[in-house]
Picture 1 (cartoon, one colour):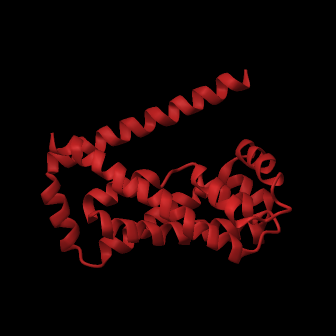
Picture 2: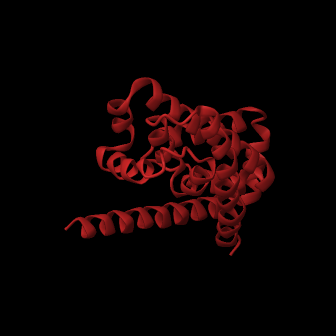
Amino acid sequence: MQFTSKLKNILLAISFVVVFYLIMALALQTIGLDNAQMLIQKTGIWAPVVFVFLCALSLILAPLSGSSLFVVGGTLFGKHDAFLLSYIASIIGCSINFWISRKLGRRVAQRFIGKENLNELDKFINKFQSSRSIIYMIVIMPLSQDLVSYAIGLTKIKYTHFLIALIFSSTIVIGGYVYIGSSLLELFVKN
């Protein structure tokens, strides 16, 4: 029963991502990629500021995913600028998650990520909490940076260790979404 529920959730998440990318591709085809990029440039500093805010917020509201925004950002801002903006947003959003858990506790963190997600993360992280290994955090963070950030905030792991792991894991996660994901989205838009 639990396996079917998890499979159903995975399929639902995959369906949502596919539909989102199709909608984005159609919207960008309709507007025109060059026109959308020109519009972003005309807004000056506001488009990057709003983008960072939305990406960070999508990480804080953990059921949402910043990955779609990272991909769209790579298409609209250019890959290098989007990488930098997404990276900043990831550091901000995941750090806020860590501190929400650390300062406000388990009940508040559970409201952001759900009881089931928090229980699963507890089992996973408790195995390695005693070592407080930065390398281990680098390995697990790409699975779901937002959720893992909340969970690590509930442990005794120091923020500096968390931040070091976040800096490294964000490079991998953001790089994949921005460079690979936005390249795929651009293929859909240009065809």
